[in-house]
Amino acid sequence: TFYKKETFAFCGFVLRRKGLGFLISAMKSLSISVVRRFLFFHKFRPIHQSHISGAAASTASSSLVSRTYGSFRENPCRNMSTGVEQSSGRNKKKVILEEAFESATTTEEMVRLFKEMELSLEGNELGFAALKLGLHLHRKGEDNEKVLSFAEKALRIFDVAGDEPTLRVAMALQLMGSANYGLNRFSDSLGCLNRADQLLVKLEAEGDNAVEYVWPVLHAVQLELANVKNAMGRREEAIANLKKSLTIAEMAFEEDSKLMGLANRSLAGACLAVLNFSEALRYALKALEIHEKELGDNSAEVALDRRLLGVIYSGLEEHDKALEQNRMSRKILQTLGMESDLTRAEIDAANMKVALGKHEEAVHLLKSAVQHTVKDSVMRALLFMSISNAMVNQQEFADSRRSLDFACEILAKHETASPLQVSEAYSQAAMQYE
Figure (cartoon, rainbow, N blue to C red):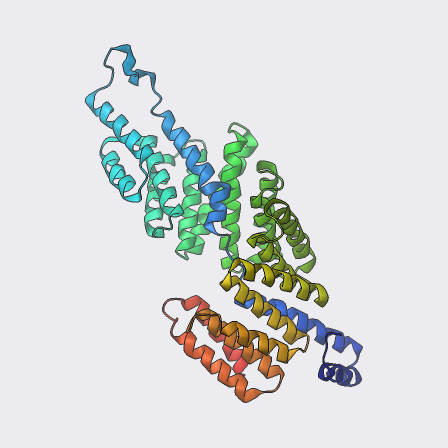
């Protein structure tokens, strides 16, 4: 029911000339092409820092820093209620600075106080302040060079030769790894994160540290490792890290929390990237189950789960299910006003229709989506590329080339701002021109 008469005619021709085996291979390649175009337009998305923060890097880590850092101030000799002055003027100033730093709410205030603390604090006290400031800057999306400088400062203080591995060293390494990743220094990032992983595994095995502190940091490290390895093209290794992060999350967090849903969806996306559809389906369905239970049937997370499921079902050649999941996803996204994600879902739907021989429907859907995109945006360029692809399959080569020319004209305006995305788009365009 999905294929046009022309598609049936093509299948008959292939069957007569090439045999059944070739025909099955050809039809399967159509399904795979949907997935590959999905992966081109929506590369394996790095786990966003907000998700990592939700697990560890922000809430748990900064809480741990605050608790440990605060312990340096809970000193009986500083109890002024005894009526005996036991702190020098210098120590009083340190206490005031520490308390002011702890209560600071703005980045500017924290940076100013830290500079003052550098003149009066030393050792672990200063290290924890540097680590806390680095985590704060990272959460705020500040310049990764600044984040890295504070993380390195903390590590230099904590990482004393001959000392036993400590959680604070692992936390500093994790922050360094995350900052280096943001700077596209993947080898440096991998080195920091691997060392952090080794330290944390050792600390977990020794049992001297409370697991409620070790697990969140170890979880964050696994997510960061997945990001870095995927960026380096080591996707199978990235999946292993995501699976480990999911195992940790199952022990550390509530079974049906939103975080567990996000973890399952990230793993589903990673499996999809290596065309492991059966595993991708299992994790995507689990993510959908959690998000429906926790957030409701019409939430944004459910819409994103269904969009992913649509592509997975295409890879499995279950086209009825693929189109239905995509339709449900687009309905929710449209209701929520999530225009960018809606456009991407429309591109997915069009690519599915192209794979099924429904070229006219695909072109109509894409042309409609173009009207809702910002003029000269990268998204509009990607839509024109999809339109071109659909027209090629209709053998409308002149119109296809014209759409591709429009796309390249738009992409040229984004070469400086988004060089990686544009270069990948140019590579795809080159294949379509050919």
